[in-house]
Length: 365
Ligand SMILES: C[S@@+](CC[C@H](N)C(=O)[O-])C[C@H]1O[C@@H](n2cnc3c(N)ncnc32)[C@H](O)[C@@H]1O
Image 1 (cartoon, helix red, strand yellow):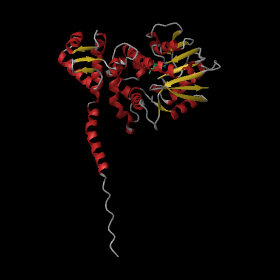
Image 2 (tube, helix red, strand yellow; image 1 turned 180 degrees about the vertical axis):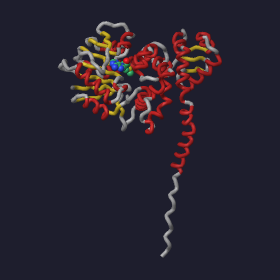
Image 3 (spheres, protein in one colour; image 1 turned 135 degrees about the horizontal axis):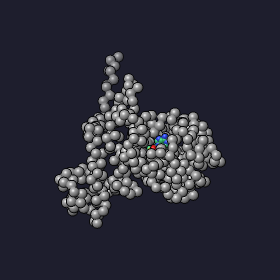
Image 4 (cartoon, rainbow, N blue to C red; image 1 turned 180 degrees about the horizontal axis):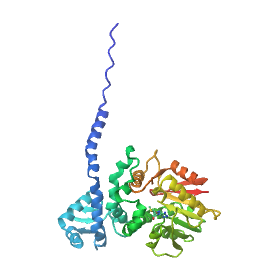
C-alpha cells in the first residue's frame, strides 16, 4: 500500500494575499487620519473665524482671487493660500485652476455665519477648549479600575455641563446657537416627512427647547399650534424674542413641566442617564395628562446595530460626544428607548424615521 502523503498546506489564493496587501497599504494611509485628524476640524474653525465663506458669498462674482480675498479679510496671502489649498483638497471650497480663483461648494456654505444651513456655531462650540478638553479624559473615565473617576466634562471643567453653562453665559449662548443650527436643518425635515405627528396638537411644550428656534419653525409649518418654549431660567432669559403663538417659560424639567396636549423633546433625553430620562418622562406624562389625545414626541437618534445608513457614523460619533460631555447621557437603540418609555409608564410607542440623524418617537400613556 502506498504511503499516504500528508495533505498539502492550503495556500492563500492570490486574491486573498492581494486583499491583505491592499488592507496593509490602506492602513498605512488611513492611520494618518487619526494621527492628524484634529487638523481638519481646526482648519475649518479657522475658516469660520477668518470669515472665508462669508467673504466669498458677499463677493459680486461667483469666484474670487487670492489677492481679492486676502485684502477683503485682511489676511496674509501666503497663509491664506495654504489654508485654501488644504480646504480645496477636501472639497470644502472649490479652486478653479484656470483662473486661479476660489468659489463656494454646498459644504462651504455651511460655514457661513448666517443662513438656513449654517453649522458655524456648532463647529465653534465643539472647538472651544471647554468642549475639547473632556475628550482627553475618556479613557480614565472608561477604565474599569477608575469606575469612580468623574465624568470627562467634570474632570476637565470642574462641574457638569449644565452647571458650567449656568455660570458662563457666553458659553451657554454658544450652545443655544449650536442647537439652533441643528433645529434649522432637522425641524423642516421632520415637518415635511411626518406632518401627521402634529395634527390635532393644539398646545405643545418644547421641553429643553433652548432659544426657541424649534418652536418658531414648527409654528411656521403648523400655525394652529400654541407653543411653550420651556427651558432653564437662564436659557429662556437669553432666548429669541417671544413671537406670536410662542411663549417662554423658565423652570426645571426634573421638577415640573407645563401642561399641554403634547410634550416635545428634541435632543434632550440623550443628555441623561436612564433613571434621569424616566424622571423627565414621568413629568412629561403628568404634563399631558389632562389632554384626551396627550402624547410625548421625542426627536432623538435611534442606534441600529444591525443596519447602516448614511447617518450611522454620525449617530455613533454623537454617542461618543455624550460620553465626553454629559454625566450619563447616551444615544440609544430601540430596545433602550423602549425600556425608558416603559419604566416611565408609557404603554405604546411608534418610531418614524425622517431624513435626519434623528427619528421621531411618539409615546402614548
Ligand atoms: C442639547 S440641548 C437641546 C436644545 C433643543 N431642544 C434643540 O434640539 O435645539 C438640551 C437643552 O436642555 C436644557 N436643559 C438642561 N437641563 C434642563 C432642566 N433641568 N430643565 C429644563 N431644561 C433643561 C438645556 O438648557 C438645553 O437647552
